[in-house]
Length: 387
Image (cartoon, rainbow, N blue to C red):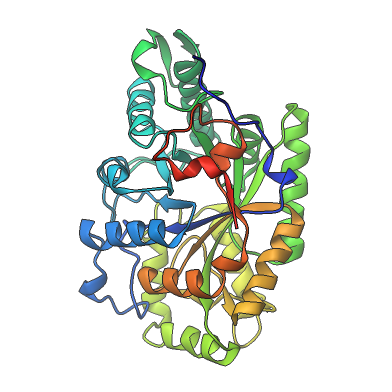
């Protein structure tokens, strides 16, 4: 019998959101930024505990990032933790070019079957460790990788010739669990070649926190680019979180979090990342420069955290009502996927789950977009939307 397929619904057509957390497999976990405590070491014990706790608390996805200098191997980590999970999706980062694309297609398909469709993919186009390519070349390589993955997942034969790859190969071993195109592709990038790549091939455009006006500009630009390809792209926001019973407590914790960092140490941390010179990182720096004396660039959006890390450099800070209102404002703008995190990640996941998560309608992107081909009795994901 043909498996029952859920109706494919674009996430813009529903009122809820995919609420995700962050697995600290890249050595970024700490209680005081700039003063590393070995209790928060990026090892299997700590990172898997954060992920499995997020699963129990009701988060619908979790980002497993990629970083060569300080990180565990993402695919290995995701494959090991996958059988231990119950309902959470794994947003697994892949750095395009690291693995021969047909082999990567097979690895992703294998992980997708282990998770019974609870897999999403974060496309990374940064330079590979020890190499240096320009932005245009890196995004072209990513485009070719994505096109090969899609052929592998949806066709009987890969027939591809490009600037980086020339492949003709049978695809029988690499069919994923998710039908209608394989795992959803999440993408973050700000340069014109990156925006064009996402518009043509990816499903969710991930943005770092900026002012409401600048986020709106990014969304309008991406929608226009995607329409030129006859597509629609969903939007996501990657942002840190500090929520406490009162705003006074939340702001006090924000100050405490940064109490051991100085400018020299902060610069060292920021510049060790492979994407330290990217356009997105420069936009985060610009946002910090435009913030007030307390580090807030707009109500409840605090940029101080960017002093001690590359990439996502701001946090939503406030009491539960203020944080909820901020998230709902983003949802009103059309953002449907959120990747939250905090320091330390385990504690902040619990705070957010206690104060805010119960008040949000949540869903899983793969279910809503019709990617998961069948529902099994032990798969809570089948519900799709929950209150």
